[in-house]
Image 1 (spheres, rainbow over the protein chains, first blue to last red):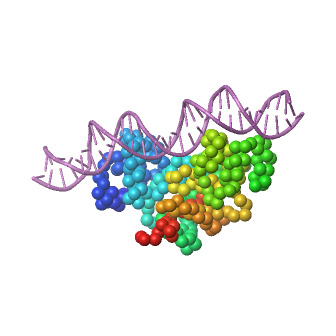
Image 2 (image 1 turned 180 degrees about the vertical axis):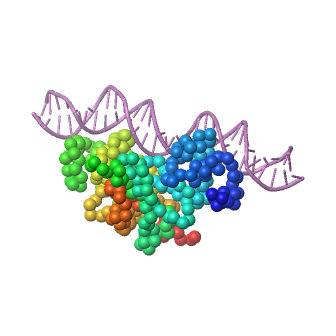
Image 3 (image 1 turned 30 degrees about the vertical axis):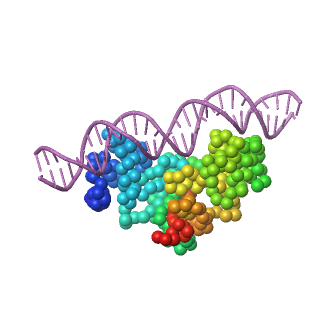
Amino acid sequence: MDHYKDIIKESGAKLTKPRLMVLEALYSQERPISLSDIADICFEIDFASVYRTIKLFDELGILQTINIGDKKPKYELETKKSHHHHIICSECGRIEKIDLCILPEIQKLTKFKIVNHSMEFIGICPDCNTGK
Amino acid sequence: MDHYKDIIKESGAKLTKPRLMVLEALYSQERPISLSDIADICFEIDFASVYRTIKLFDELGILQTINIGDKKPKYELETKKSHHHHIICSECGRIEKIDLCILPEIQKLTKFKIVNHSMEFIGICPDCNTGK
DNA sequence: GATCAAATGCAAACTACTTGCAATTAGGGT
DNA sequence: ACCCTAATTGCAAGTAGTTTGCATTTGATC
């Protein structure tokens, strides 16, 4: 947690109440959450501030953005230890982590210098799949 | 081309002028295109009809949707022969195909029954990378 | 060619995001 | 601890992209 606060301070940005609350909301979450999820949790903070805070966190590189299908983007704090992707249940919305990533293989295949990537899977989780 | 027309007819949907034009627009394209791209090409068709046509094509499973970052979704016709993904240049928007896919490996790793997936990469293409 | 459910065009509604600006606040200097 | 100032916030309005209701039109069957 202090790690993230340090990054914010070192960037020159102020450590304001809205920013601390959004950070706390992300930090306490097991799964990626959307802007409106954060706004719901931090109900005393204006949506515009949540929006700008997420934009800031993204620029500071402490955020991972997950785009699943046509739904709203979801966010989670970047942790250096575990790079991972996600699979989401199309029935109940449950999200699980996936540890496999082929970024290095793709980088070998292309002449592009890869700066970002997303790998998301949509499926039916075991609970929702029973009785089919 | 007739393959797609057959799928549309067999679904019970009518083979109307707007649908044929959208199909033609997608068919003649080398790269995925957005709703507004299609609307620009098929300028005599109302945007709402383009929208509903794409929705229909998607339901019929003849479409692949590509979501790259926070930009508009792009669409291309599904071809059974070549399953692939994409890398897009963050500078000029150029899109290239990537043939590697780890869907089978992921399916082995998860208890979810995977029904859909996306793997998109964002990078800087060789042309845009020169002079840096 | 007549029939009619399906599809279209139009216009308005909606959702999610984005921005301008006056009021507020964090944090360095004193 | 208080002042100062630029950074940040809340508010409200704007924007982009998508979605929908409904009267009119049209493709496909008879």
